[in-house]
Image 1 (cartoon, rainbow, N blue to C red):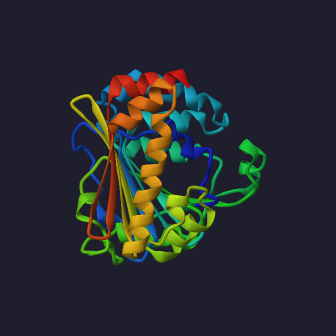
Image 2: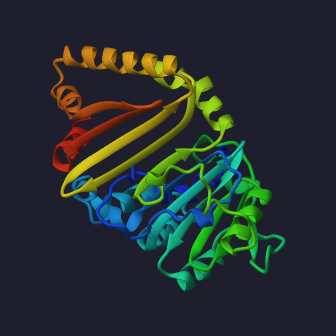
Length: 303
């Protein structure tokens, strides 16, 4: 998404991608049915992982939010402390981000303190716009309007008023959702961090802008998930190719990359190489990496 309010999205950053238990799992019923990509992070489970603690935990997140604009810094820190889950969807050049919290009353009270303007209500839900001059000059972003609303305990951020309206309709049960979609892989229904492409336009955009040869191949779908279980971080990427030829080329590219990595004198590169497995089934290519959280945290700190 190009223009979802970057200052508020600081609450999502610092690489939140780990698993311990299913606390706030991905719920397809909250996502509109016609979108190109969806993602979800279980923030509750993240806080319980060894990796999160090893890279600084909540204190590191709070320190990162010190760079937020002063007018929203208190709100961003409150949001980060009460965040339970994050979902997002993308359709074309726009989309929405949902920040689910555990404190609806505090969320509603904090909204009133932000430099935002009331807009037209949707399904009885108050909506707001963010003035262009609020985002002008922050972190080099061009001026633009942001759109937001509070639906129960969830803060909804959107690039356009139309995207915000679609989100509110679905969250309120008044719009078609992905709940019964066969386009979502079953593995994406439960997870702590998942990202799934479910539209050709998104895949075409990835292939157009990708520098990696692997992503330039003919893909039908792409699903990524990252988690931690018993102190081991597992990252998996599943790509469904459109042809046997594309599958074979993808496997050859990965084999070549692994051969090059095996020649490296960098210890972290060798450990990562040993942690990776590649498998195929039909037209699906799966790459899985497993590494102890302590080793991964050390690699992050050493960079």
